[in-house]
Image (cartoon, rainbow, N blue to C red; front, top):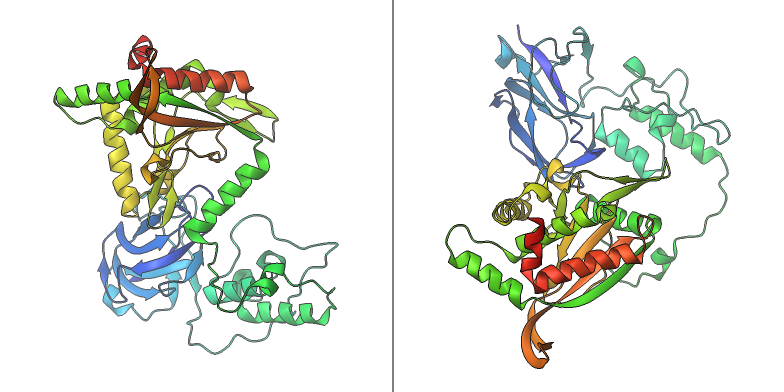
Length: 442
């Protein structure tokens, strides 16, 4: 007899709490294999294809394309085992026993610490649930009965949306369904209780009143929202300062041309600048660090995981090159190309976008000379590189046309003073102007 397994939206890492369904890859009635991708979702960090840990027949899908689901909400149910084809209409859900996927996505897979148990899921078309014996109420402000951290017992995305749209904290509710499941009736009861309490008048947001007719409103969610949150947090928490210098990059460009003329894989300018950055961080390790506010400590990091800003159709992303300090210019070139292609196609994994310790921002590709970068929180510094362009320059006592670049360096003033930041930037500029300086550290 077939067993119906419920697969929930897993934790995709780095504290992400929700994801939007972009595209279903299977339909009800399809046969799926273990670890076959069943849905493509978009988190605040990346587009991800989510594999299912069970093999069998898809009996149900939860959520339409464009729906936002919280981590832990059901995605699909799969009939597993003999008679799977007859289980498409079954309402019994069995949690995994000692079989399943070895997939390492957080939040699902085999869990040998518990035994199997069955529970009945009410179909969406079933009659409304009976009114709860004790109507749920919003917790009093002076003694909020908020649940401890962990999954909120809600199955229906519609119930979550109803609560979110009306400002109801689901953790403050006691569900009347099986095992404390929060039902629509519980949220509606909380809304009625909330409406019965006189609310203090609140001023309407200024932006809503000031918006002219025909103004377009764009939700700050998904990748755009994640970028906004991170940059705002950086400005709030980090006392940053910026210094900059113009450098003659003529010799660096000549060295690159000579490398590429010698045969083998081509070396990019970005890779050379990255190699210079890692050498500079070896000299000034204060800048490869982060600040632990809870412990009130500066944490100097042993490895350089180099982020680089990449503009995509979805917005700005910062892929991370792991252990950049151990890579050659050729290796860095190849890794930059690989991650950039993944970024352009929306296939970066969350792990490709996290864990950076220092960021290199080449905004020169936009045809601009300078900028004041915002530090990629929780890092301590970022190097910005403008366009390399012919300009008048005094070279060996004479005016000449040289390839000039402006380098901007933004740093967290908590981790170092201006002398350290200036020393870092000056060393980078010296390597750009005379690449032979870099040979001392290779």
